[in-house]
View 1: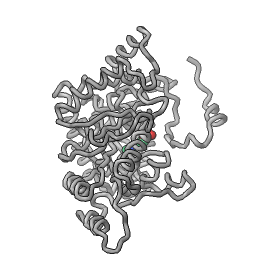
View 2: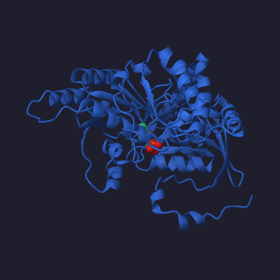
View 3: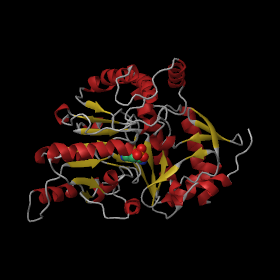
View 4: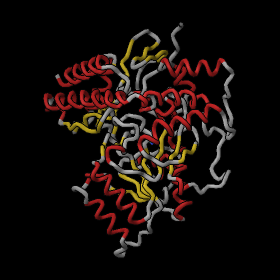
Length: 419
Ligand code: PMP
């Protein structure tokens, strides 16, 4: 294969590309937790498509199911027609995910991406409650379209709209202020006290903030959030677009907190194969839209139904969850030791499960470490409003050997930067 002329990107791609993934290679191939570039250089993937590839690249079972489906001329696009691929997904999602967790949700296909599920959740919450405002949280990330951006707590991203964004009240996330005082503050607002704040339609949050700095909310805080929502008739929307599908150790990130959101947003790794796919889960009593009140050409991708159904097989095996949790402990222990052994990082271990990192107080250090790691064959990203976190995001299917190889590269990179 001839080498791609990199200038093609400069010549034809506009600045809008702006996803700022500064990996100076052209990638051609990927399998499991490995990727290769045009020059044949191998990389370990600790990025997983920002959480869209939790099962790794080109999972063999999903691949063969998809190839078989295409070879048999399976339906590719169906709009809102019923298809066998869609039926199989709904049925398996119910049997393998919802029923064993005693969760009573209806499933909606809101459009292909994360921002689509968030938009549908915000829109449904308004329709159900007849209210407009939504409470969201500092450093939360929910998407780039007007509605989802209006609940995204990142000033730089909000600037993209060029106009003030309405109907959102941003609150401090978990322990940004001491203990739970942010919630006391919120309740005092809701109680009136001359604040003039209208009761909002919904609260939207991630249980672990993926883009905003790998901030993990405590389970206690999440429970209190749920109680406040119940008390005031506010719908609780958990955005599990990034933290869901096993990333934190359980299928839904909110499971260990013992809360049951009214609406759940999922996308990214749901198709299992990196295909655009999203669902919105909501309690049956919220099923009030009439046909046509939320439609769209690419709602529910049949190829994604096929791979997503195959991906759910992982969850039929109880050992799968355990294996993610065991490997999560390895990641956590590695980070704690690295942080202890390297006071120069001025760091703190953050996150939970396979959604972790070290937040460093040293300006620019996390970016230097990820760039050095890339040179040494490890793909890793930064997170946080000032790129202050180096983020470990390997596929949850990675084996211990793959993890150790990645850890070694991180250790070497940190040493070489700080020497
Ligand atoms: N919610 C969260 C928590 C996300 O991390 C993202 C994407 N990073 C989105 C929503 C938006 O998803 P998409 O980019 O697919 O629109």
